[in-house]
Length: 157
Image 1 (spheres, rainbow, N blue to C red):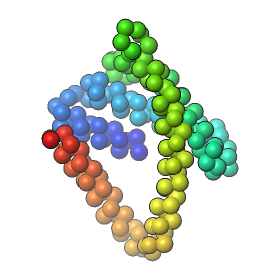
Image 2: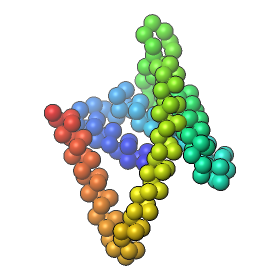
Image 3: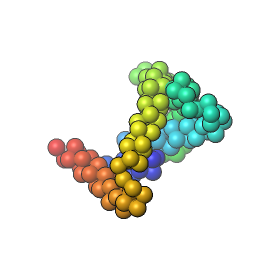
């Protein structure tokens, strides 16, 4: 997922004629990777049985957000562009707005897991195994192209 999000951001850079190391491109890509690393670290620590409960999923999301937000100021070492700071201070905005990141992750992680399970069950009922493989070869690229067209339309309008 991180690679897909990064690809979309690089496509955005191409449309905006910005270099990859520009703060509007490189910094969000770095943030995507920090979020993924934080999530993977925490998932590997927390017991699998515990993560199946919505409360634990919410806690996992909140903890991943806290970890990612604290890792983000290191972006300066990856892109050469420091994280944005609160005006008049040297305090990174990622830390200043940590409560929003935690709240968003606290709700979206369990919601994402629930929606994923529902979609998987729907797909299993809808399509038999052989047809499912063929459909995946069509739907995934079609979704990618659709998303790229939407990004392009948003940037060109």
